[in-house]
Length: 192
Image (cartoon, rainbow, N blue to C red; front, side):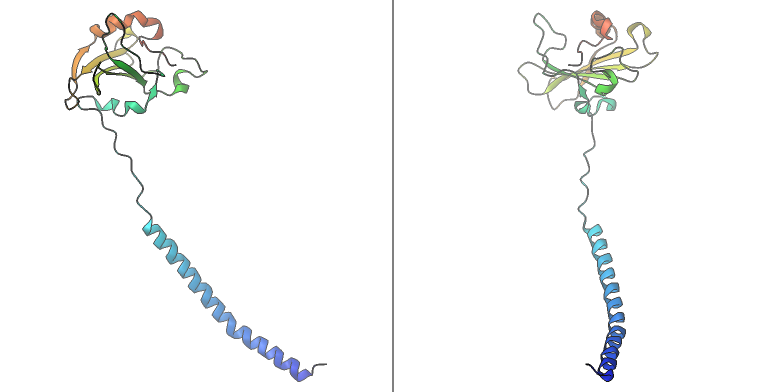
């Protein structure tokens, strides 16, 4: 059996150890918290800069509202080849619209007319060329041309990839041809 004196010494040692260790443990906790804060702040400062997307810029000579059209909803699944016997938009073509699939085909099938504010862009790579040489744009603006479902038409071309696009046709020249597809809101290419 242990003596009372032995138990008293052991109790004193434990109490002394607690008195000495408690401040030391609190100090260590503060140091660790400070170090943790420093590490977090250092990590925040050393974060690599977020990659910012390059600004979307329209092809030279084209209006800003069609910048980035290649990211819009593409109506055709495969490039549209030139039409035999004459094609006003001669070349391999792709057609894009600034709407979502849900906007123009809410149940999986395209509905007409296109919503106000729609912009349709047709690009064409001319035969034997490796750059876009034609851009045809249709803009739907409420009240702009009620006789043609409020579409405005304009077509741009260029003959060199380093040149700016220039207007080649607009208005009557365009809607005269597109009137053949009035039943699908003047747009030849339907969503595939």
